[in-house]
Image (cartoon, rainbow, N blue to C red; front, side):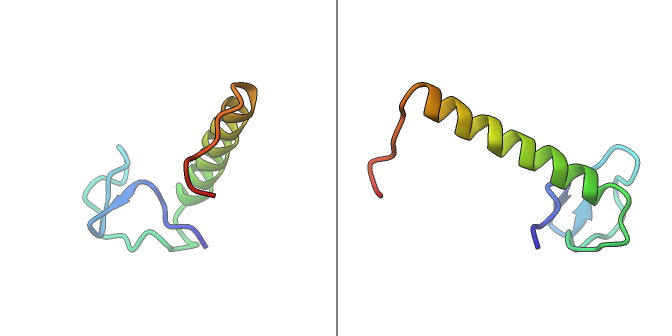
Length: 60
């Protein structure tokens, strides 16, 4: 399970949930699934960009 990207230092940083105590792993949070989807899209786009430009890391 991934930690929600909006949770920082145990506090939700989302505009609507700002200041609410949050562990970042709660399945009851209405924002978490959307942040997970957004994070997956960002990671996939970064992977596609690396493949398009044939970029490889120094360490494999």
